[in-house]
Length: 150
Length: 347
Image (tube, rainbow over all chains, first blue to last red; front, side, top):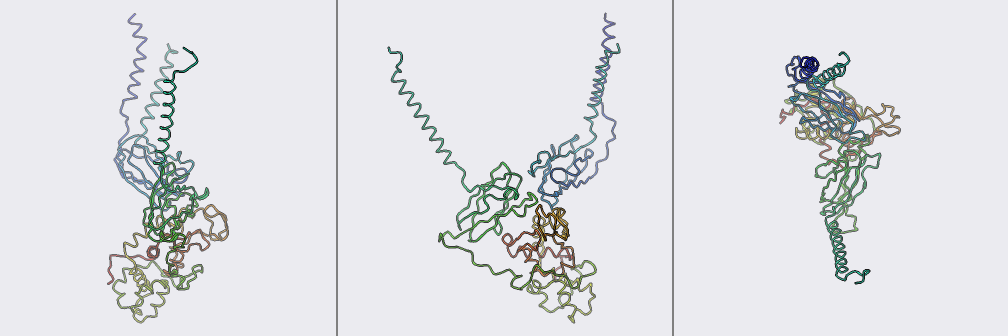
């Protein structure tokens, strides 16, 4: 009785261990040395260009906001960034990207009818959350298929 | 006991209750009336949607004018020309209350300070301020003297090509020591205001004192004369105003390539300009072009700023900047031609 139940439980234990590893294992990503980065973001109704900023944790990030048509702003979730500029002006600001993750860029000045959808993103470090959730999905798939191979 | 009758005490209580209810309602209405927001409601909308509503206000000298500003669409700004109240932002969904006080009668212009759309620069309104003393009397401001370009009889619509242009960009600091040997009238404000740099260069070329100078050195001398007519604080003030009000069309470097100019027709001027159709509308002028810029006197440039127009979308700034501020802007425009070194003291 005990023997058969152990035999039945073992694959699940392995899968659970795998899931824990996927969630907690430090990723073998070489930490890049922090450096200074400068982005010139041209803002026009209703998009940023570039809209995706990729930096490494610890980088000194300088953002220059250059509106191209009307007054625009730029704020970043979780970072103390809030810029505003009229076209013809450039507003700039430097901060340290000390929080890894993906954060949304948002226009902070009501610039027109599609203003709420004027967003972009700041990606600090590799998207580990994405990779871990993909790994977890694979483990879940294996768990779903497991009874078929018995 | 009669079942259909209500006891008199109960009826009295019900009447009292109703009276109290009415009294409370009256009190609430009175409180709401007393606490009502004061001031004139001014709504801001993009010029295509009507601009300032209302666009004409009235006020009296010495009496505060309270305004409640709100935007109907995007972020706007509110400021009054030739008045020292600071500009405020006007956001949708948010009342902004300001109080203005005028100590001179006259017609004031209020304008949008945030680039709210293609026609932002058309968003203007007027406040007519009359003397408090005599209602009904015209209470007008003392007539201002005509602008300098009219006094000098300059046609600001005519082309003004420079007769001579330098090879490179003149640097003012080369000449710091040489200016002292010149006849005094070249250094006067009057000469500066009424002459273009190329006219000054041609006049100086005839001067015996300047015979030894090369053409390039002579241009440096002109740049030095122009530099001597301004100061660092004036250029700094003008730079801020330029970036806020002019750079969107004329470009941060003065090349006439500002972001708003991209949507404009080219020199032929028959396409849609700033969202409107029209004939003869052209791109903003370039202050980086020596052929036009060095042929323009300060009085001519000031006239263009004050009056606007010229077949372009240039707004008029006369009611917004005072004469001294306009002149500071003109001094700044010449920095697109000359390299100044304002550490050097000429005296």
